[in-house]
Image 1 (cartoon, rainbow, N blue to C red):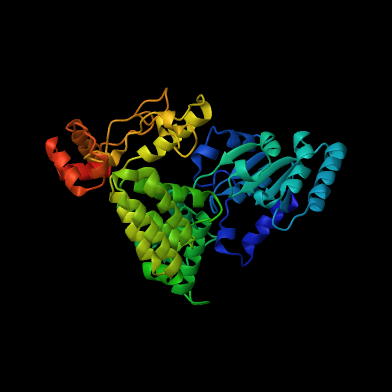
Image 2: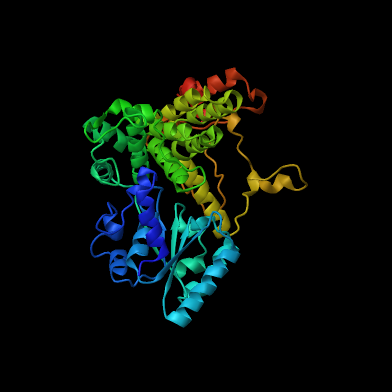
Length: 476
């Protein structure tokens, strides 16, 4: 016997429902895409076909077929299929459905499949209300969510369910969905034709969202033929111009608090790290177009300047700081140019992670290594008995502003933490400093001559060193 849910779905197809609702697949054979999740031989398809479904969480972006799969399950199961929306539902609603399912199971021996749309919108206590019923199979849960269930759904509920991830539909799947709608009796059959370039524009606009593709098609048909002007005798041609007129703005999906937010900022950072300015600008544009906070973007650029560039190009940190300040002071839309300039600079700059690796290695030593004492000659001299600490070699008493002296505590050697990259400023400064130091024979100046340019220059000349080189090395 058909359940009420199935009858309602059939009724929708005869009414003036949106094209996307009229074209919703009713069987697995009509379902398009998601081969890995629900293709032949998959667990989900086998469970649906044999009516042996256990609790499942359908996870994926909007328009990828989650609700459609729930409808197909409703059409193919002998179990009772009931639905609760997490947007409007309450714990009371859940308990009512669970009690009815328990009564149905005991009196009729009939299972209940409970579909919870947008399950991530249920808070923890609402999700907890499902646990016992799911565990003892009073209900078979089918949850649908656009948010990562591993973050948004109770771990206890997840452990009792199987997560099936749906991907954005590929272009071929979108084309199939749109062509079917043009020729279907539930769609636009006989009233419209669709130009090839119009089809491709719809595919581009859809961005992997099947529902969005049908909405674009429907809007374009309305632009092509105002109400009542389309007839089966004279099919109306839908052109690319109609599609663009109906969809003046190409809005790609983006969720500032969900997976898309993290995926795109990750791609943005990796593009700069990978020295690809075009890719970095693309992901920057995706975020700006979606309304992402520009200060959030500027902070990520600021971090990358030290994390991935560091002293390979010390100027990168100043550029990032300037971009952040410009973002604060100017704001959008103008600060998009400041951000773009900084992004291009970061992408083109030589790369080094020596700074991050160095401080992390030092912190690891501090936290896990033994206690190490400050060498006596480096200790503070403003205390009684400090005269016994031994001689400290004052670098400015030497012509290059440098003298060989141990600064690390015992047990650690130079090069323990900092490993400069062979790129950019970091590479040539290290090489230049090493060359300068190798050619020096350190000789302290007299105390009376400390700090005088003449003494330093004479001392440098006496040692055969280049004063300009020494000056450069002293800054290293």
